[in-house]
Image (cartoon, rainbow over all chains, first blue to last red; front, side):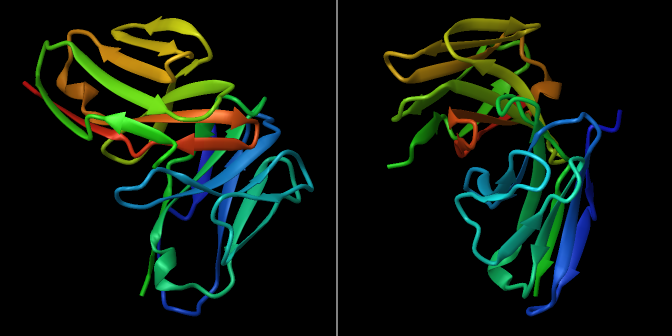
Length: 111
Length: 108
């Protein structure tokens, strides 16, 4: 099992550009989450999904969109990137909504 | 006031020392998690607690629900324990609040 994988690992964008981060899990988990991690702050939830075809907003959803068309994949989109979105993004999945399994992270820089 | 606080923020220990990291929180929870973030960035779940105490190898986690406090202990610390340790509280299936982390460095 690969667990939770994230693509890409690193990305540099210019302000206004768009991109999609892909999270994939092979554990048949129902719950999936997108977090961002900024220096000096704890992980903050952007969006989450409790099953295929469902998404919901987390603590910091503005500027991001998500989709869960397939159970194993959770996509995070930035329509018009801003420097404030420079961060490390982590995806996680969970079977029951309790213990979460994290991906390796995507380091995004917006210039 | 943050809902999850950790102390200390940074900790340096000599190899072999007993280490304690503390977590306090201010709201009702269904569970508390301890996570380890390696220097390379990967995050691993160490424990999930709703009461009492759990042990895994040299790691021990305790929680006192009445006092809204949890501790993570590392016995016989080793340089490979150097990492950021994160406390997170779960208030429902869709709400997990993460603490700021404690950065641990174990010196040989």
